[in-house]
Length: 174
Image (cartoon, rainbow, N blue to C red):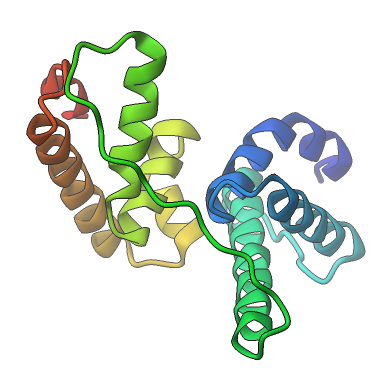
């Protein structure tokens, strides 16, 4: 048996980063989703049965909580009770970039991908999950996850090359 509270503390930073991704960068919504996920784990409404890693299970719970909150906000916006808007991705400027700008450009290029492709890259590149673990988090068949992963890398490579990006595309080959 694992010490759930201790494990959650160790995974907190990565969990918050994943929650930010799932909520489109909204710190407030990410905090709410993460809080809801922690509550679900600690009160037993989401029970970890150790069939996968705690990290992939937790990320799946966070994703579900973020989606539920997003659906609720969308419904409220539909009936005119909320007017939140999402920021748009600005086009890249063609010039030599420093490291911080390069990271921002990669993030912007990732935002151009489909939601599934963004999610799989986020989990594999930034949260160091395997494609199999990412498939569990996203509730996808392994073959489907591999297909989205391969297509995402290809599309990202194409996007970064198209933008005259000072980047060696072979670093995206993994």
